[in-house]
Length: 216
Length: 274
Image 1: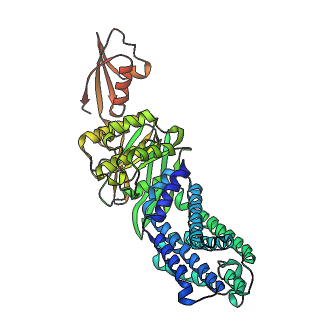
Image 2: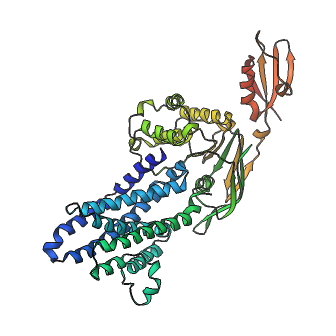
């Protein structure tokens, strides 16, 4: 019953203020106009959509957690199970990312692309999860944090200083660089797996970090 | 039995203390009333007790497996469900320990919510939302019930009904904390302990009321059962078919109930000067 209650609540939270739907609409407009407007290759389009789904995941995630703070203060008390609460949140956000990927590539029905875009969006939402309270209580620090993470996520970390901390950075640019190196889409699946694990690690860290805020 | 203990509890928000070094205990069968002005920190205190805020210092001890019911002063949740669906969902969240369907129906009727069962909670007036929130807090049959300004937007009849439900929970071994900005003399007799939250401190008020005694007057019927030892200690008068018991204020209601169960006729009560 708790799960059903939470699923219902979180789905309403995602669609409450139309931000996610607006972002999805913009994504679809870009998808249907990018060919005629820019004439990009499939490879370039895939790179752009990886970045876009990551950013949509991040922004929708931040909005979701902001709404959660605003509207669900007392729902947490009713549920009284911290890990169930945040686990259902993560599953719902993963479903949201699947929906983004499926709607973007529904005409191609390419499941590899759907997996790649789902995991990219998932990294975005989990970054939002780890930053949720910083963003709420210290908006300036939160926004700077988002910009830094966005920069690190999208910077080429295959060389230079970032190479040494490659393992700690969100594996978004890694996927793009691998794609640029001429690998097939199937070759990106392990990186998608890495993105998924990265998201789960962020979930676990944020879960432990914010537990004190939830429980006595 | 102690249900909840707060030891040396302090909380500050952006450099300002909501409350400092607060000590508080809530027992079974107790209704604790916290009076405080606007901004005195009542809501923050209740939020901290229920675990929605982490104190900056001190600790809260809660009896294992305690179930909380909480009526916040303002619930920002946007509830698009109907009153009926929402209350049933909250009832289901509490599992087997929640009130039964029949009890829920009775509670809804008692709180005058029957005509609104099929209305969306979101569309209700503030007063009706408050009643839904109150019902949502009690349907789980909590051991610890925290109510933040429960009587706002309510008429005197509803306040009395709420107090009856609160009293019933207390009589069933729950502990209840009520925080409010106003203290109405007509309801003060319901509370077992009174606190004042002022200047960031929580002070227990031991007013004259606390030491007030009542003389309870009963008459004997043909099927009356003899007084058990726990009640005979309060016996002051036993003449013909008249019984008078001198009891402390906090035990008044429970003793009347017990005497009625023993088939005594309750004739009245008078307050004794200290």
